[in-house]
Length: 134
Image 1 (tube, rainbow, N blue to C red):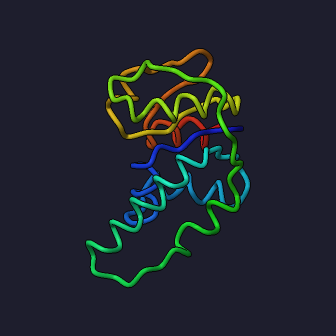
Image 2 (image 1 turned 135 degrees about the vertical axis):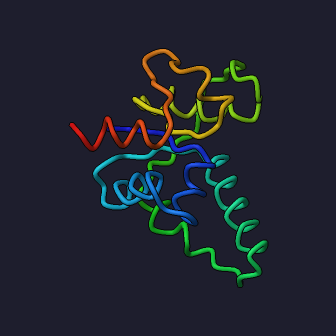
């Protein structure tokens, strides 16, 4: 199964645990294929670094290493302008071009869309309840 993970789900999983961490663990364990673009990976790294800096920790870029290694990196060809936050369109583009079934997000601007073609957009809790119960 192919999914796209929104940045806020990744941050929640890396720093706080819960359902987002279950998803990240499934990606690292190669039970789920997470897809991302270079732009998305750059955003992940930038936001993780901001979180580390806020906590006054030392720079540790290895936090994302196992996760990014497990991801399939694609470069999108699709361009969409659907999301009310234009910066979130990159997740829709990635999902479409990688043939993902889900976008897992905590972002209301994405969640309000609910469905994009054959792609379901849901929060981490709903995804875990659906995926881990199958």
